[in-house]
Length: 277
Image 1 (cartoon, one colour):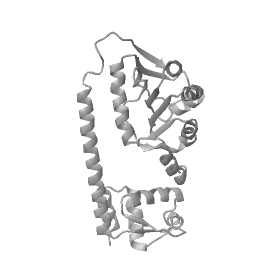
Image 2 (cartoon, rainbow, N blue to C red):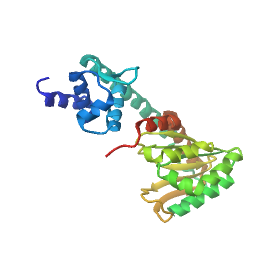
Image 3 (cartoon, rainbow, N blue to C red):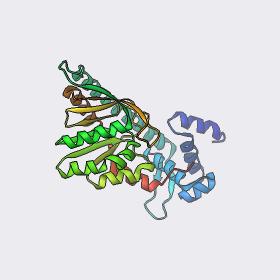
C-alpha cells in the first residue's frame, strides 16, 4: 500500500464512496479505533464518522465490537471485497425482481383510465390540495393511502392532522410512504402517535399520489414544493375514476412491501443525529 491514492481509487471503483474508502484504509493500516479517535484523525465530526462506519459495517467491510466503548476494525481485504461483491449481487437480484414485478403490474394495468364518464380536474395550489384532502377524508369510510414527499408532512401537521385523527377514530386506516430524513423526525412521530402508519422509501423518485377508498385519487403532475405556503403552486390531477385509483393502489402496495417501517427508520436517524455540514 505504498501508493494510497491508487488503492483508494480502486476501492471507489468497487462501490465505496471516497469517505468510506479513506476510513477503511485508515482502519486497515492503523488497526481498530473508536469513532471519537477516527473523528480526530480526519478532523471531522463524530456523527459524520459514525454514519460512514455504519455504511461500511452494512457492506461487510468493517466489524463493530460488542464491548463498550465500541471500536471498529477493518475486515481482511479479501473478505471485505467478497462481502461487497455479495451485497452488490443481492441488490442487483432484488432490483431485477422489482423490475419484473413493476413490468407485470404495468401490463395488468395497461389501460389505467376507464372509458366510462368520470370527473377529471387539475388542482393548482397547495391550498386546494389541502381542501380536497379534507373533503375526501370526511366522505370516505375505509382507507387513505399516499406516497408523498416528506415536506408534505408539514402541511399535514398544520392543516390535516385533526381530520386524520377523526377519520381514524371512525375506524379508518391511513398509510403513507415517504423518504424520511432527519428534519422530519418529529413530524413523522407526531403522525405515528395518532395511529397513522408510515414507511420509509430511500430517495424515492417515482410518482406522488393519494388514494381514498380505492375510488378517488390525486396524483402529482408537477409538485416541486419548496415552501410551507398554501399559495405554493402545484399541478395535481384529481379524479373519481376507480380504475385509475385501483392502479395507484396496486403501485402503493408494491412500494409498501419494499419500504422500511417508519419506527425503524426513526430509530436509525436518532442514533445518527443531524448531519453536519
